[in-house]
Length: 196
Image (cartoon, rainbow, N blue to C red):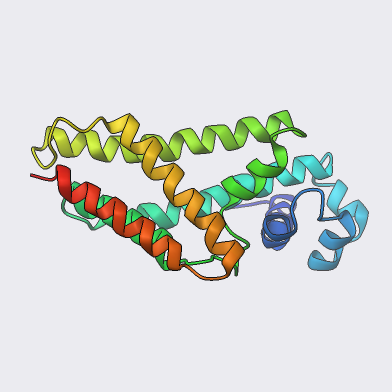
């Protein structure tokens, strides 16, 4: 059971998650967080050492939610091809993902690449984990005899991840997911091409 302090900290993270994901780290002020949480500045800084500390906690929270969502979508899929398709459908279904502000890896990574080495490292690790998930599915599919052994799991994982993250950015810029659908279709065709 969480203490009152832990509950308050979690409340602050949850209430500011969309703010930071939409407005960015630099674009979100402590006043914005205070307005969203109805807490005084002392209530924020009593739980976080700095705004950067809160940003990192928000990123972790957003990634936990994203990972849990993807894990649940893949859980009931019987084949490795179905798992890859479900992962692609996850990104296709969320379209421009405007409600939550988009992909946290893309949003936080773009802003942190030159300004916040610790956040940059967090985002880089999240990217590695996302690519590793894809590579594990492909490797398991090869081992199960579902995929041809000519496909290189890590290379395909980098390609698939880069393509759908790029499509997320484009979807946000155009406020529609028409290009995401093209990317999803191309990747599904490639998966079909190495499926046995």
